[in-house]
Length: 144
Image (tube, rainbow, N blue to C red; front, side):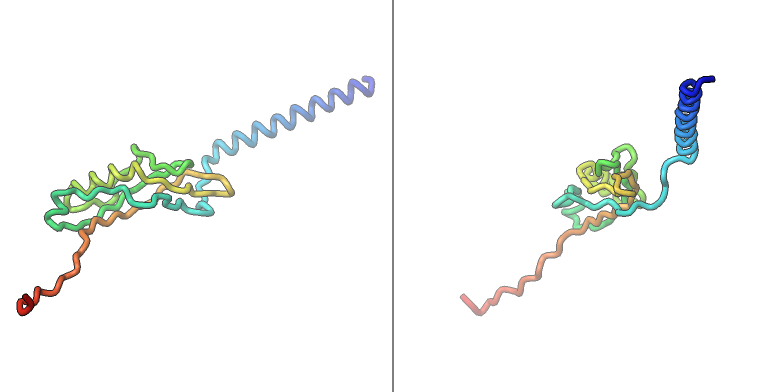
């Protein structure tokens, strides 16, 4: 076999070998599954204000409560609505509904792993608390 044919045959085997190694690496990565190591940074809330509306009837009754949501935040920093669930509910279902509705408006800087944005699930506590007003001193009845 001439040297040029032998070189071409060896080059073909080398290319086939590299391609086969790539296929094996891809298959091993696929079988191993997604990287589940902890992210280098957790999601950060970007909203200037929280988008949760206090249920009016409960506010007027001066009722406080809290809700904890489980939010799956995608690699773009948005909660995935169909994955958002109430982890720990309030005594009144209206608080749970208000929390789920408001969660759609949340925006985050996504979690990062090895420099890449990755989806991540967090527990997000929400406190519904009626603000307390300062007590005014009684009007002085001696002044007229």
